[in-house]
Image (cartoon, rainbow, N blue to C red):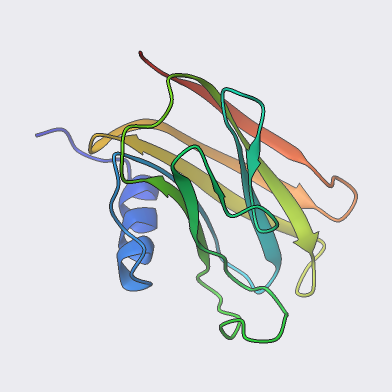
Length: 145
């Protein structure tokens, strides 16, 4: 068994805690403040999964954290967002983007992104998002045919 990087283990634990774990492919965004970061996944056909379009190509935004809208869960200092495919995801190149949608707590948030495919960590990346940088491309990854 391979050891998971600490960031990946921490992110997976957060996803389980909010009841959004599982899937053949899972993209996870985790950060540690009350800001509202948004996870965007651009699929091989160019379509985007994010808070305004929660489903596409079998992928579903399963958890959206720290949104300040009616009916949303209360903000947390340990937020996580995840997009998952419970059936085989379309093959091709995917792009992960982080959007600092609403920076209520601080002008900058440090985050980690973890991508798991068939239970194996494909990618872990750290980054930061700030008020002045609306869209932060984090990584690309490929799913074979």
